[in-house]
Image (tube, rainbow, N blue to C red):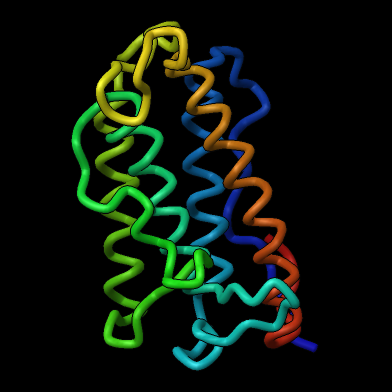
Length: 174
């Protein structure tokens, strides 16, 4: 069984500013997800070891779409092409064979960089715009709510990826 040492440090416990802490933990989990994929062959990235059938590459693609749905289409209300583009014909996560793992990773990293820039300095209390994902002001959550939702989504999926990685090659740890 392969073991790993976690090269990714959790954000400092001295943080007291909620905004700083929230952004630091989002970045932490973004890096944890990428780290869990490092070293997997393309075959392993495209292989599911779980009854639900998702693959590590599909999970990464899903997370890029999650960021896009919640921040670009959701918070900013911008039109986006195919907001549910991570879903295949059977309504499961999907990455076409012709899309390489490097392309999926680059799209994820680009979306994360865009997300960071889009919310930089924006008050957590600001509500999402209507016209994109949210039809009415009553439906539109605050940026703080959206970022906490993203955080829980990352934490959940990072944990699932821990299991998938351990099943793939025995690597454990964050």
